[in-house]
View (cartoon, rainbow, N blue to C red):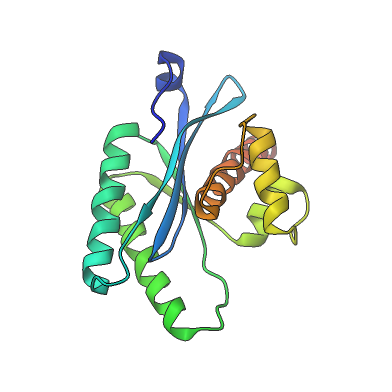
Length: 174
């Protein structure tokens, strides 16, 4: 797991981006210092398929608490769920998202929610962009050497970038 690189990163606005899931939860801490966006840390939480749903949710909550305690994000951005064909999947991911929101609330992290369309629009300029386009933009915006893996991690970075971009726009409008 990447860690804080320097003291400047400690003084930056830190946004925790989250791509909810049950098997894999992508997360990213993205900083903004004096208008410059930079990666602080990113990764994913994986849970084992053979564990009960309760155990998996507990693992997500515990790992997320550790991430929050380590990186101290002031704000969080969480991807909203969209329509799933598999009803069982949507329920399980919804439960994971609920645990994520509860954990953020308990840790007093301000929460914003974004739809996949908003995230794609913010990162690529096109709300119906393909996953690969979003991943390439994440890589380019943060000047990373490679696209973060798994996809859930790159998605979490995109969620955090969307939030930072939305904050900038909201400051201009208000």
